[in-house]
Length: 543
Image 1 (tube, helix red, strand yellow):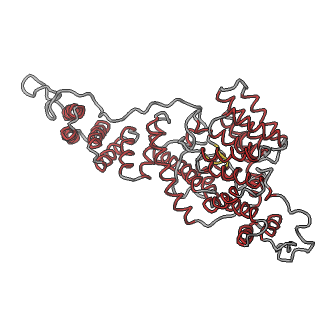
Image 2 (image 1 turned 90 degrees about the vertical axis):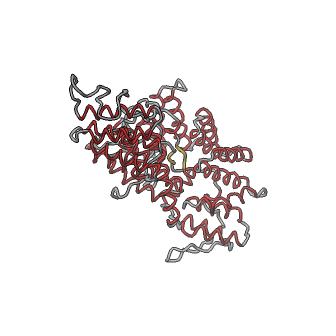
Image 3 (image 1 turned 180 degrees about the vertical axis):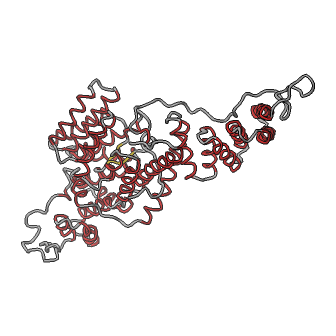
């Protein structure tokens, strides 16, 4: 897919902050990008400290007491004095304007800067650009945003890499609600400043999030529900080991009749919508699951609780959390239902809350699941993922250990534990050397070669260690195993044009409006950087 239209960009926070590690699992399987802003240009660069949020409010040039015009910085004209040049008189007017600016007399400052502009020889580009930028600073104090944008445009035309004018124009575009133009200007500032200034990074993050939310809201509202591939659905269910609804039909539940030639499910011995739905699951005929489950629910049949949970699960899989929640709430409230069903509903609702960035509600559900079903390995696996998201690494490791104790063959839990141990080593909160943690990933993918999550998490660690070639190999293996896992396309490296293609593909696979907004932000960031690179003659970056 071509780099069609701009989208937004924001990735992880810059360095060792939590945002770099905010990796939640969408519905318990695919990884969801966390919030924060790290432009893709610097994604694979060595970590650098960022400058403080220094305000760019003051005009440029030293203030001096000369009159606004003609006085040559206070030196009178007349016999015994050399005539001052037009540039000298312009500088004197600017200096007087600076004095008024610092005194808070912005209208007078504007008059002096205007005179400086009129006096300045047109070939003096840098000086003239400074005068326009200074006048824009005065207009900014008066909140005349259109005039700010116009003067900054003049300044940038005269001095294309004028960071102060670009940033001031970006702020004016933000006030004028010109998000696309704001994004382009602040992207140029971030690149020209080598991602060193926190103030410009924060503005980039802000506008990208706004753009992402706007685009996701529109697209998500109008999109058709999309059933994931059979491979994705199997991967999702593999993240649960105590999920009754994913277990095969028991002997005696289905008849010995052959399926008809059209592939329709054979009749089950009981007239049950739920059992038919289960049979459709075995046949990978997933589009009929919701309708058959609904029949069981409307009939208030024997398997009503199971049907509610199955329908909720497939609502989640097609990205309809609003429809899933009432069904999950219903199962959780059924005190006479199988405890495994209620625990599974709590885990899925907790994972949904985690995806929606509601960690308190997510924690409550996981804790309740652990209380009612303490031997359920799935509780500890999914709660451990939340602990990683919250940067509670030691508690995450404890949960993964408990999951592995209960289910030693849990590939996902072992991969996630390995990631948690790597996190401890990487941040220095544990003496475990990074190389030992990296070896742990090798052991996991060797023991569980079909676990896509193991390759994905290992690839993230390799990227942190700047082993980009090997990281891409791991991402490729993950894509082979899960070709429609949106997150893999997000994290995988490549040039920006390739990244935009990946992001656009991931957007169409997003399972929630929030996930889609993050992806739009990432895509727009990549797009903006390619446009800025072309505009300013910079070498397009690789990720």
